[in-house]
Length: 425
Image 1 (tube, helix red, strand yellow):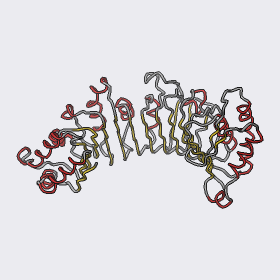
Image 2 (image 1 turned 90 degrees about the vertical axis):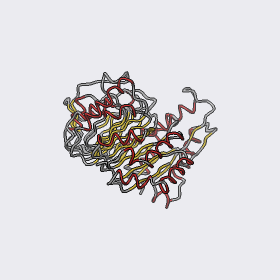
Image 3 (image 1 turned 90 degrees about the horizontal axis):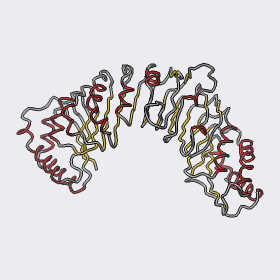
Image 4 (image 1 turned 60 degrees about the vertical axis):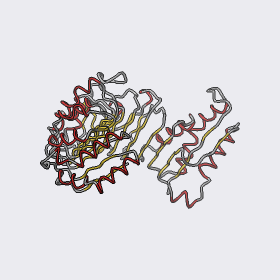
């Protein structure tokens, strides 16, 4: 019994160069959709992809008009042939317009029984989905306008992922079935949003609105390069959130973390790439404010990559941070001097030299003679230390020092709780 339709560019490929009539076109579709062996069709997800190559791609071409006319008929035929489909997944970068229309027709046709819908392609979808059985919704839209986004009932989904690739956004797209100014995500447990801007002060790609939102069952929230209004942040954090993962702007992370964090058991904050000058000045004060609020959270992780903040590390105050990843070259003495500021750190991952031989030599010299520079062992709780050394020869030299130069023993002496040292590429 076929329950899943999966449209994937990596799968079955039928190329059409001269489909000069609707009859020819329909016969190709028949071969594509119905040519699989019965045992495969019944035991595996129904996988299909095809590419239409036309000499004339203009909107007025005969074949284009035939494709438009055929999409509804093909969708109806598929729905009749496979009435039990409950999952549709599409992953296409450059789908033909016929395929875009076909997907829309299928989703609308299966609306009442869909439990999972995944869209990752530039599809205009100005339709309404009630989807009363929908459990998982994954929408990645690009190259379309905000007017081409679907309108979706928020009541049934337990997991929602939205990636809008700088398309203006409004929570109004979830207003189906709501006659009031409050949108309630009754069953939503897991929410992930990427490139979602709904704060009028956050950028040009914004639509602000005055709708109230409620997330009574939300437990997991992942935001990536997104900006939320204070009211929306409060709504997301007010009903027992357990897991928060925030990537992007330190300002956005701070906005979320201004809310009560007492229900969290996991907090992950990630900053990768450039920090703008106005944010760089605020980086330490804002992170200090965040990590002084995280008492009682079991897992608190911070990842900083491609942002060299070595010069301001002496000002950090992160007493409840448990896991730290620094993806930039940091002098080892700066790192050791920082340890009293992170007294609950148990896992540390750092880049220590990149391709700079002088930095590696300085690091090995310091660790070889650590007792001269730091005569008293630290009170650090670090149990796992991961050292990233990308250059293979430097990594080999450092490993030799670890084994025969006393570096490992010295690290164990200075970090009494240390159990594992990993040298990573």
